[in-house]
Length: 118
Image (cartoon, rainbow, N blue to C red; front, side, top):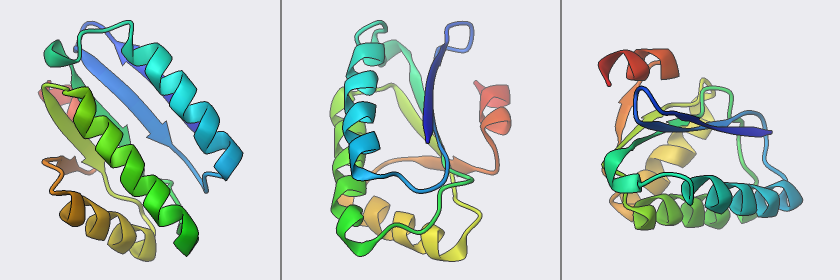
């Protein structure tokens, strides 16, 4: 499950991901992401990726997560923030992909904490 929202006052593009993303839902996410990104100027916005409730991904879904991170980077947001999953294994999976992609993202404990500093 996911949610995409734009906080215009904080200039934040927020993506919240919960649970386990199925392949079909991933395809719908891409469509929704592109639709919402087209409504903002990414160079003026920070992206927040809230993943506290993300769960362990199947091995075959890890490349999809990597592609999502590449897509975020290619969008060209001003800055990137994220929250680590509560699951230790999911955190390790995400950390590995972030390192492989050389994704310049600042992690905080919660989306609300990130919004406070924007």
